[in-house]
Image (tube, rainbow, N blue to C red; front, side, top):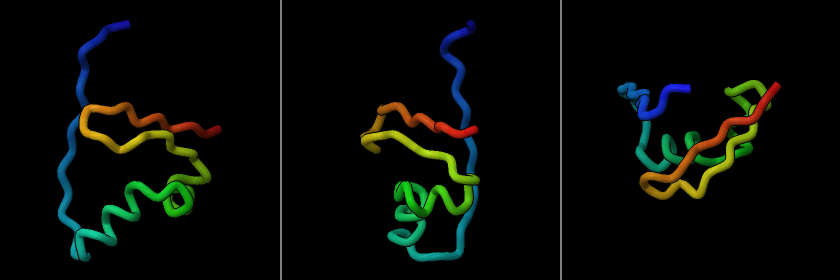
Length: 54
């Protein structure tokens, strides 16, 4: 397996920052738009984000 790969994306969202952050970090909200996928992270800079789903 190749290491050191980084995925980056940019998007503009017309909504308050706190609402966007909540949608990106709240596991219950994430399940609504990621087809019941669970997310595991402590949301600290440099930490892993693990997506689990079927």
